Image (cartoon, rainbow, N blue to C red; front, side, top):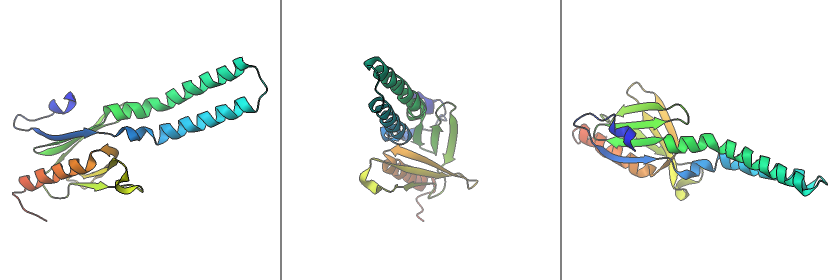
Length: 164
């Protein structure tokens, strides 16, 4: 992931990096694919048409499923979270990337939130708070607990070892 390296200061190093978990595709894209499959199956079953009609319906269903997966797949491949020796860097977005840089100069800058499934799924939501008080949430982050641990360790080091 060379994106983060372009943003590093000369005395800054990457401590931990991760991205989104492939489970991000299960939400919208997976539900849409299931819906398209059910609709295509119902169209085929409830119409007394030749095999060519059924093949056309299934071909269009596959095209629709692929189109529905493009943006989530782009988001999966283009999102990157990195803890450096001084800050949390996040690049996110499916088509247009946005960059968030949060200095790790105070405690509890980064937090973790599990969804309804708790720790049974291998992803979680990472919450970052900017110095201006803006709250940013990034869902389906792989290795989210490790990322938060690394960010908190860097924040403790930056604040001189103080605990709060």
